[in-house]
Image 1 (cartoon, rainbow, N blue to C red):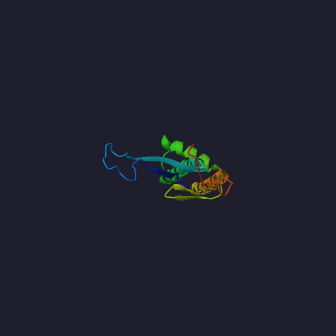
Image 2 (image 1 turned 90 degrees about the vertical axis):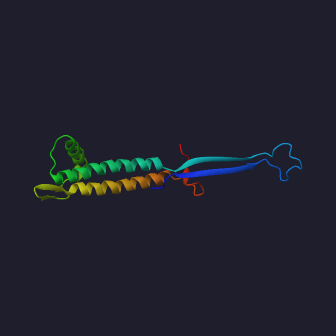
Image 3 (image 1 turned 180 degrees about the vertical axis):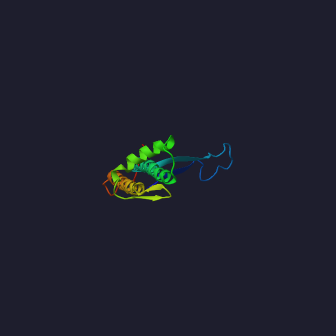
Length: 147
């Protein structure tokens, strides 16, 4: 993902004459330095950030569900929330892969498949957002304003 770029503009103005006067009655003008900073965001940056944040949350629920089921964690409190949300996220992929049982605990491979599919889908959506938000004029800047 293209990261924001910090742009620094510096200007130096001097008011001092090229040749100092023979008898300095007034001190020469001081040099003024004006500096400004701004952050320039690539087009579609915020949309891509949101897409990656959303897929990270989804992947965390699925990974936690896989790990908690494999460890044999009980279905109460926090684990109940993880099982419910993770199960809903893995539901479209149920039946694609089998369940392996080791030491009496299931390994829900559907969670791993769901993580891979959701991450690939997020990558595609982020790329589409970048393509859709990039100006079609080839001479235009690749960075937009930081609104």
